[in-house]
Amino acid sequence: MKRILFVCLGNICRSPAAEGVFRSIARESGLQVEIDSAGTSDWHLGEAPYPPMQQAAHARGYDLSALRARQFRPADFEEFDLIIGMDADNIANMERRRPPDNQTPLCLFTDYAPESGADHVPDPYYTRDFDAALDLIETAARGLAAKLAD
Ligand code: 4NP
Image (cartoon, rainbow, N blue to C red; front, side):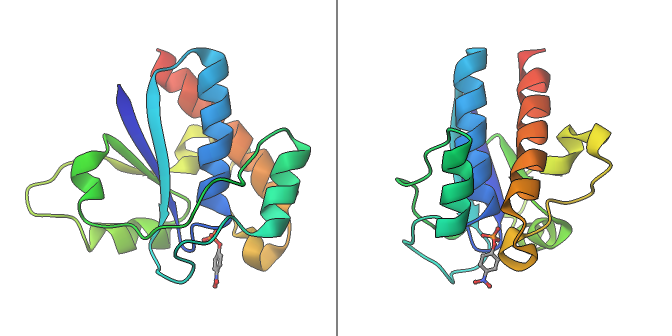
């Protein structure tokens, strides 16, 4: 079973949304995957996803209410097969914590949504556009599911 970790800054907007959306798409696609999310910061430890993101996700049929924020840790490099960041800062922050000799692939979620032309998932905590973030997250989640089904 492939273990996949989604990572953003706070683990209250983008990565929990990616976790919930991808869990739903993986289930529909019959993919056997283990999915989690984390933040590079410790700013929101133990918090549920940001309420406006929960509401926007709920309107599309995704229930994020049981998720709780945790911080990315070096051991995640050993515990997951693929780690997916939402932007280049997330990737740089994780690379700094990579244990010696570890080769777990780190990539951007937008790598799986080339048709979007986006090179990161804009942070709706700042843009306030939760639907635009979810549109991109759904596109990338479908792309990732297609890749894993290959
Ligand atoms: P996220 O968004 O990285 O998508 O969870 C953020 C949430 C909170 C903050 C920054 C980004 N913050 O500054 O508290």
